[in-house]
Image 1 (tube, rainbow, N blue to C red):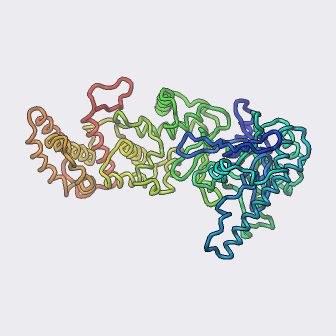
Image 2: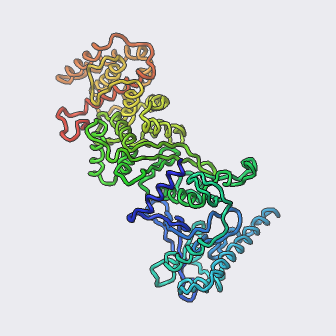
Image 3: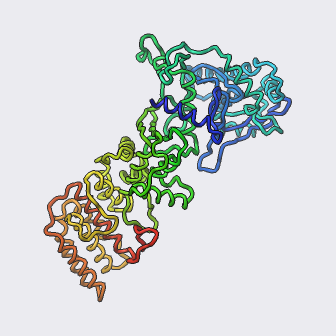
Amino acid sequence: MILQHLCEYYDRVAADPSETIAEPGFAPQNISFVVLLDVDGTLTDIQDVRDTDGKTPRPKVMRLPDCGKRTSGVSAQFLWDKADYLLGWINPELLVEPTKESESDKKKRLKKIDRIAKSHKACADFHLKQGDLNVPQFNALCRFFEHWTLDQLTAQQLEKLESVGTGFGVFRVRGEQQYLHEIPALRDHWIQSQSGNEESGPKSTCLVSGDLQSVARLHPSIKGVRGAQSSGASIVSFNKDAFTSYGKKQSYNAPVGESATFRYTTALNKLLQNGSDRRIQIGDTTYVFWADQPTPCEDLFGFGIDPERAEDEERAKEAGRLMQRIAEGECDTPDAGVPFHVLGLSPNASRLSIRFWISDTAGELIQRVSLHQQRLKIVRGAKDRDMIPLWLILAQTARESKEIPPLLGGALLRSVLTGGRYPESLLAAIIRRIRADREINHVRAATIKAVLSRNYQLEISVMLDPERPEPAYQMGRLFAALERAQEDALGPGLNATIKDRYFGAASSTPASVFPRLIRMSQHHVSKLEGGRKVVADKRLQEIMGRIDRFPGHLGLLDQGLFAIGYYHQRQDFFTKKTKDPNDNQLATA
């Protein structure tokens, strides 16, 4: 089913004149450098074409002739390849003989050098056997392969190769704007050569189309999944005798036709490519999403899961307002009946694990995402986000990103997209982090509110609710009021408050802490003067009047209510009493 929907996405994009996607016989590839040739085939320069705007250089994606997946053997690509294939370039480290080198290590090193020589010869022979194509730029390339030796490289060119030597390169003739693989005559030659290629697999019923056709022996690599090998990884792959079934080896175990194999891998690589607005990273899983036909829901879905992807602030506000109206039932989802798909992939050595798959209508998914964002609505500070991305929620569950439970991200997204209960471990993880670092920020409070609303069916207001009956909520308010009285009495230079010492105990075993804190507050309130003393005294009396007793222990649910009560009361201290006409949830100091 997944491969079938990916094939349909390829057909959709290929039929859209505003979109670009590789045609059969071509595939996207990350290119790091260009070999610049003169018309006589002389190498004139090595150009680094990587994008250097970010922290690390990023290769440029080009659509290139595809000779198929290269395994352990030596096989060349047409008009592009690695530096060892194109130039016979050898990493200088291989040429240095270590002072202490065992005989086996020496054999391995010499074997690598010999393989590079064979790779370059295979690349040269492959291009020269294409014959006279009557293309001047290709003639220059053939002359290059006929006369090239590695010692022709200058020191400057060697230095460039050392920085991009592990990447892939293409050719261009000096004075020309097009790379060789972009020249129409060479592209046509490649397409014609592939149509006559008889090296196809045995015929079988394709699992995707149901037609009888040649089965792909190897499936092209999938690139763009964080944590996977840079050269790509496979979804469909067999490499052990234990996987042989009824005498069928490799991908013949899962017969997928060559056409379907090309379409699904090309579509998935397009969704995963750098800069794609159909890709989201949550934890260790990379997610892609798409609809069966062009629809605004694709942009709306991506914004709902990761609001920070919206570059235009005005557009983000507009999308946020639309999602709020959808959640409240004030308007319908555009193209609600269009089928919509979400696929999650995570790395597993040289293969990919399908961690997540959900397929539904766009209307159902957008409605659930909108409801999720509505559950997160809670009073916030001026610098806090109006809408919260899932990755930021996960970041609040652990001290470091590597400590986030690997399955929590998928479970959280599944609960959002299915409308089911949030993972029980999410609330426990947030409470645990609050007790560890004594910080209740906007994201943590919003997440607790969402979990309590969905899992425990509690109606929790956005703003402070003084009339709320639960003792745990009122104890959270009381703790915030006691902390405020301490801050007012001891001044702004206070290094630590009662929160830093007593919050964990107060939120879990209140009977052991609150009597002492109340006695301390009498000392703090007595230091205040005038109206501040009256306000503090009335506030404490009002809250304590709603609490009958302090229980010996609070469960996880009540600890969540305690945190919400504390957060609500703290935000109320810094909220202007005049509401913002544009956002009644905004709290400003």
